[in-house]
Image (cartoon, rainbow, N blue to C red; front, side, top):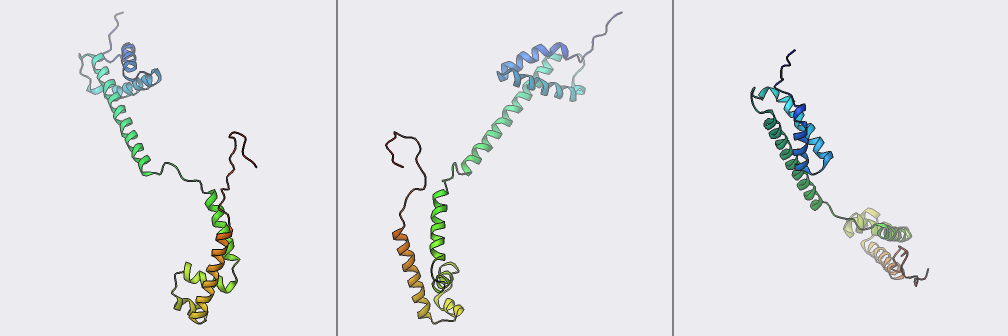
Length: 179
């Protein structure tokens, strides 16, 4: 029985495809993926293969083009990642010390007498003018200004009495640090 040769027999070309893929990507796993992608493309475009054409050349061309597409895609991804890194801040400063400090200032503000706290809040946080804040509280402008002045003095006193200490403990070092 005479065996008829099939014109689209890619099995006989696998060794050449794998060698070429390894030469292109220099990694056997990536080479296998590249061969797989090339064979899928070849199968999808098998109708474009000219009968009587050189199957090996056609497959190697598809493999090469698949490799070029991967290289371009990887460069594009790398470029987008590089641009994203430039847009994003590399690292964020630790917020622990700031959080502790903010809590201390908040506590000092809430420890102010209620009249002083109300007056300072309306002017400093709500951004009302002295006249608007005084009208809102139903007090004269002079009284409002006096309450704000006393509140600010207490906060300045708190600020002066609060040490600026790092709340982080250094671990390690030469052992000369005292706890």
